[in-house]
Image (cartoon, rainbow, N blue to C red; front, side, top):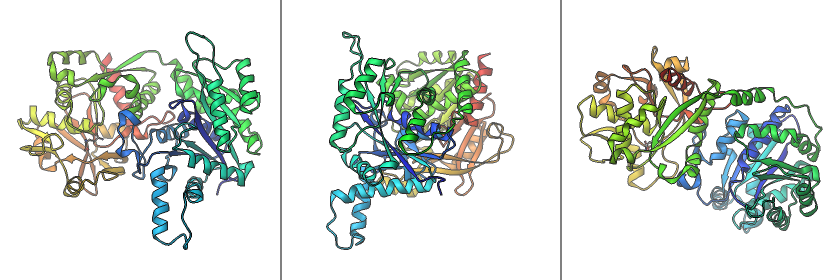
Length: 545
Ligand code: GLN
C-alpha cells in the first residue's frame, strides 16, 4: 500500500513535440523521491501500434525494452534512469492497447449487454490502467505523461480520462503543461502567445493547467511570467522556468530551486516536505567536474540521418556511456561513423585508430553490414577496446569466423538466408514467426538469466557468476560453430542456462573485446552505472594512455 492517498500528476505538452515532457515527468518523479515519497511514471502514447517495437527508431526514437518483455517508448528509459528503478509494462499504454482491451472485454461479455462506446468506455479503460500501474508500484505520486501535444485530435481521450479523474477527486489530481516559448531571431524576444493558445486549447478539453513549465533557450523573465499568469490562468509562482541545459540530469535541481515539488504537493493537498537530493547532487557534481575527454567511436548504419535522430535512436547506449564515463571522471565524446563509408573506401578504416574505444550498437537489416564487419576486424587486429551490442556481437562472430577460422562465407541468415556457414541463425520457432509475418512483440524480449564463466573479462566486470540482462533480437549464435570459434580464440563467457544460448563472447588475445547478445544499456542508471560499460570505459582509459 502507498503510505498516502494516491496522487496523480498529468504532464501534457504544448506548442510542439520534443519539448522535454519525458525528462520533465522523470524529474518530477525524482523530486518526489527526494521528498521521501514513492513515485512512478506512466507513458500514454496516442498511437494505434500495440507497442513501439514496430515503429521506425529514426522517426520515433529508441525502442526501450522493460524487464517484463515489453517494447516501449524511450521515455520509459528516462523514467528508469531518473527514478533509479525498473518501470514495468503496466506503465506503458497506447491507444491501440486501450482499444484492444475494450474490444476483448466486449467479446467476453464483460460489459453485460451495454452499448460499448468511445466515451465513457475508452477513458474508463485508461483510468483503470493508470490505477493499476499506481497499485503495482505502490506509488504515493503517479506521474502520467500524455504523448503528443494538446490540440491534437489523437490524444483527446487521454485528456478526457484526466479530466474525469480530476472531476471525481480534484484534490488528488494536478496538471502540468510543458510548453515551448520561442525567441524568434529577428524579434529577439521570448514569445508567450503560442503557449497562451496551448493553455486555452487545454481549457477546451475541460482542463486548466496548474503549472506551466516554460521550455525555451533562455530563462523566463518577470514580464513573461506575468503574461503566462494573466493569460493562462495560473499563478505567477507556478510559471516555472526551464531553459535549455547541457546535462539533463540537472533538471530536477533546476525545478526544485523554484520549489516545484512543494508547490505540487500543496496543489495536491499534501504537506510540503524536506527535500534530500544529496545523492543526486553529488552525481551531478561529478558530471560537471569530469573534464578529460574519452573518445568513443560508434559504428553503425542509420547514421547518415544527422545528429538529431541519432541521439534519440540510441539514447540508452549514449546515456550508458555517459554514466560510466562520468563515474570514471571522464567526459565522453561520441563520434558517429556511417559504416557504408568503410564499404566504399576501406582505407578510411585507419581513422578508427584515433579512438579510445569503439562500439557497434544493435541494429537490423543488411545495409552497411559489410562495413561494420570491416571495422570490427580493424579494432580486433589493432587491439582497440571493443563493445559489441546485440548485432555488434553477432557481426563480431562473423568477422572472426571469416578472418580467423577460415569460414570465408560465414554470415548471419538475416543478411544471407542461404549462407553456407550460418554463424548466426534463427531457431525454428522464430522462423515460423517470420514465415507467417508475425513480427509484433515476437522477438526474444526482456530479461533472461546468463551464467558467466569464471576468470573471464565478463566475470571481472560483473564480479558475479549469474546475471540477468534485457534482450531484443530474433537471431542467435549457432552453437554448431562454438568449437571452431573457440579454436580461433573466442571465449564464450556468458550462456543462458535454460536454452544454452550464447549471451557473451570475448576474444582472448585482445585487451578488451566483448560482445553481448543482450543490451546492457537498458539497465544503466546515472546513480548506478552499468558494470560492463564501466569496465569498457576503464579499458578505453587504459588504451588512451
Ligand atoms: N538483427 C539482430 C537480431 O534480430 C540483432 C538485433 C539487435 O541488435 N537488437 O537478432
